[in-house]
Length: 295
Image 1 (cartoon, rainbow, N blue to C red):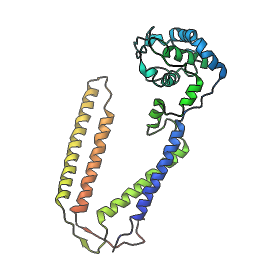
Image 2: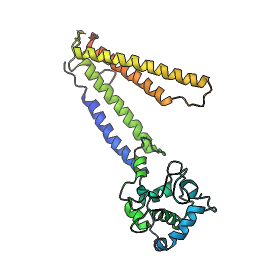
Image 3: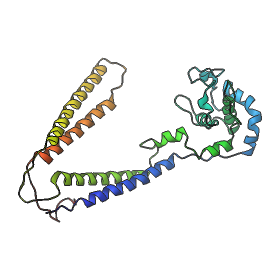
Image 4: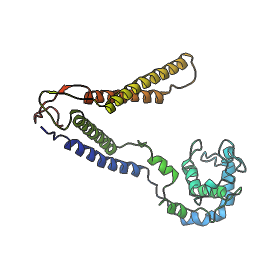
């Protein structure tokens, strides 16, 4: 009897792929650019005020709002220190200053964000001060209009956010879609595995299987991987335990432990699947529409 139960798992996987595209669309909406307001007054004052206001913010900060001085980390002359060197730094000017504006606004690494601590005039002033000092130069001062125009391009901060598998703020649609995708993938993969493991035809009685050299090599390799990752897992656990027993200020390598444990499960599953497919004689039953599972 020919099997006819591979169609629905394929439909489930196809639907899961569509749901995944929708999920990525929702994730990207959360990390899109915030619109930049182009204030003509700010734009007109930038070229005139940045040498003085920018110098003041860079060297003194803004005590009224808690904005710290940039010179404390980057040096009085942009020579660097706790923060990166700014003098002659082409990375700051290669895109007309958009990167510099984004870093000042949002922060990066150990550098705090100045959004909310500097008003627009101060923010553009200090950005332009950096972009026009210590060998740095751009053709025209950075303005809100240039930043708004640059939003049609994907900046490094947005790329970083979009590369995250899980956004910082999950809402109900994302949770529902993620759960639905997991259910569909599980259903589809189990269904396809059932077809692969049991064959395209079902015959009453005992189904005799015959192993092949490739299958033998595969089961030996997967069994060896199971042993290997088991040894690595025990070794990592022992290292972490010894560090804990010695009261060393070192965090356990949870990532390593989790990776080894996952590989043990996967390689063991591969070993069992190959054994069932190529080495285990089993009873093949005729399909019944009243079966327990829909596949």
